[in-house]
View 1 (cartoon, rainbow, N blue to C red):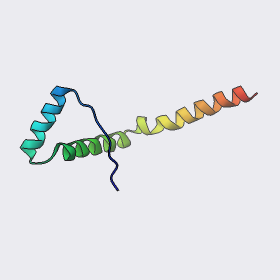
View 2 (tube, rainbow, N blue to C red):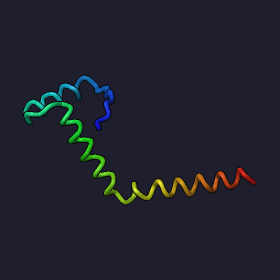
View 3 (cartoon, rainbow, N blue to C red):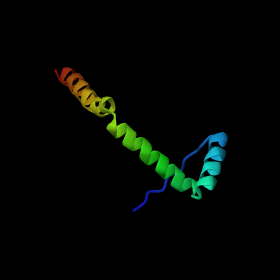
View 4 (cartoon, one colour):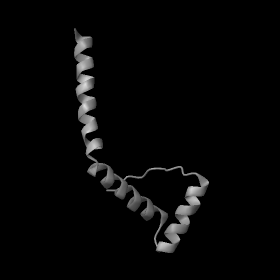
Length: 69
């Protein structure tokens, strides 16, 4: 099931996206999905990014433990 969301783009980016989609023969929606999917894949492959949540959880747990004393 798809989830609908609203994206507000700067006018120049929206116009560029429309032009790229038109040349590719696709919709702006498909272009956004393709681009966002590629970015998510890139971020997931970034080891620094994927270790950050664990570091944050550890830091937050330490802070909460200190507050609980």
